[in-house]
Amino acid sequence: MSYGLLEQLIKQTIEASPEPIVSFVWHGGEPTLAGLDFYQRAVEFQQKYLPPGWQAWNNLQTNGLLLNKKWCAFLKENRFDVGISIDGSEAVHDVNRRDLGGNPTCERTRQAVRLLKEAGIQPDLLCTVNAATLSEPEGVYRALEELDCGWVQFIPIVARLPEGGFSPESVTPEGYGDFLCQIFDLWIHSGLGRMDIQLFAETARILAGGQASLCWMAPECDRAVVVEEDGRVYSCDHFVDPEHRLGRLDKEDL
Image (tube, helix red, strand yellow):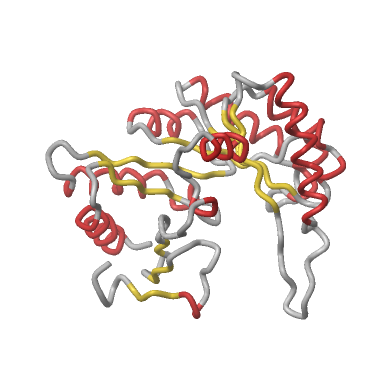
């Protein structure tokens, strides 16, 4: 995204916000590819346009491979929350998450978690659940538990094929349900009180009479407007297609 568009996005998002804490989630692809300078400028723009007493909340979702001490110092200084994508054990993670040279990345991702924690940042862990994951629920859980980060999200991979049906790496409803049941049994005995799992925490919140913080568990889904690098705007990152495009930031007001 150009700096001109970035400034326009931040300015209009702040102006449109109904409350004094304005959320910015930096997602991808891999958002660290934009470079550290990009986020330094983003923070400058936020400080420029935030009214007195307001604040910006930033969340960076990354695979961690480009993080180093300089990155971590910036993220800590500017109070970024960070989510790290790691699919549990090496046996599962490295099936699908390899670098451009075809090399495994699990240990490098673990090192990114360690760097963040050394800098004083407690990252969230985001674990995709695919066909390879289903046979390793305990190995996946123990690997995530060992990182001692306090918050884990499990995200099912469901990829539709153009000709119909689903890709081989997709999970089935039954497979995903069985996986979560096994994760719950492990968590209730060793993780309760030390590590929250998003689905279980959100379910407990709703059962206790609270409001869902996840859009897909709420009565309406309208909380995560997406702006692509060219200014196209969508109401959800699961529906980034021409049919669901709301407009363009470079042609009209957010």
